[in-house]
Length: 150
Ligand code: 5GP
Ligand code: ZN
Image (cartoon, rainbow, N blue to C red; front, side, top):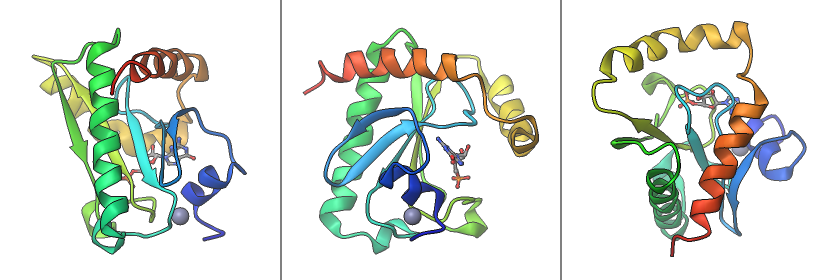
């Protein structure tokens, strides 16, 4: 879809910091991360909701995110847990109408800081993206481990 920002990332017409790409999916760093290591994985096919994707694409999307989670666990980010999250339609807080799965590192005792980040998120659009060098560094760390995950 020409006016979809994630289709533009798939097409390479807007930049992104990619973690993984294959025939069906692309994974890249969220430009307004809720926390370090916030990765989005999208199908190359434009669909707004998960159930509209072909089953093999859906399965591959979830498998890819799980592999990336393994890489994040092994990386220097060393989370204690992660969220796999899909906001599947505008009423569920979906702001980009192209299926995407969030992978979000969590740490023991981080509930308050995590909730504060969630509350601040709408204002990120005003303050702009986080520094690219932090995203690059985390992407490098995750990519390095992903190469070792089967
Ligand atoms: P949603 O709220 O739709 O579940 O999540 C959309 C996510 O996409 C948000 O976390 C937002 O920060 C991220 N995002 C929006 N535009 C861009 C972009 O141009 N590049 C990247 N890398 N992430 C984006
Ligand atoms: Zn799209």
